[in-house]
Length: 295
Image (cartoon, rainbow, N blue to C red; front, side, top):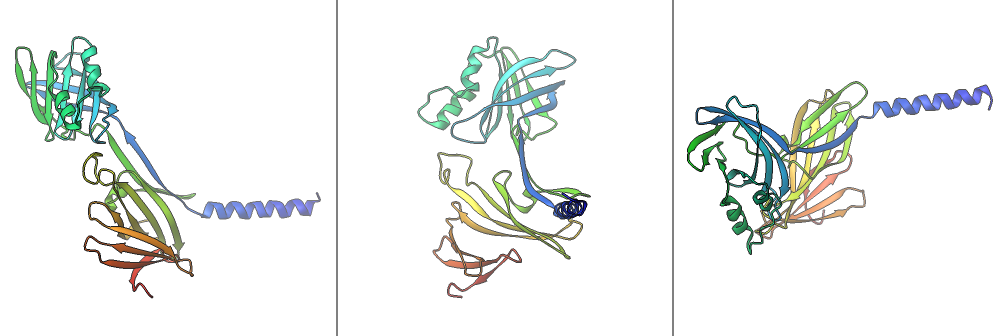
């Protein structure tokens, strides 16, 4: 290859690199944390708890078993505990033998009903210490001979926590927006499309998540889904956002989507009263407006 050919290829590579750098990188980042450290008081003594999620229950995604340890007063010794996080709060046990706690940790009790099994785990016997904490972060500690009030400095009992952020990045800057600020869930979000112009950036997001955490109850197998349009200025500062709910078991709402001849999307949404409304999503502006069905 001659010198001129190499120069042309080098120039093309430079232009392609410049174009790729100029394009922002936009995606949804989701992750979770499954262990936390808590501090509080047991009676008049300081209490430190280190807890982690062991296993999720088979019927409710917000109910899970816990393993960990506590340290009380000036002691440097960590004492192992097992427990349950459910809709009422925590119950933690210390057993002299690890065997009684395995039934709780692995959800192996063969109860005929899900909530009966949760009540069973909350009433285990054979423990040497028991900690019970409600959703306000207060409760009671017991052993075989005594009891004392409990209080946590951090009342958030959710050892399992999920996060969902819109991540924006180019060669010079980086930013993340918490998607829960737009009433989106902490999981099941995605970037559908985006547009950039001299006014800033428009990002079209989609969400889909289970309607209820209790899988065996009403809408336990249902979904909530929809669209969220986020508009940012050239500095990626939030200007406004709007939501279009599509499918909802909780609201008894369903939708259907069709592609128009212009490549736009037409969403027909039926509410709980059986009324249909139609929305046209413009692929250029990534915005929607109500239209007549025959428009």
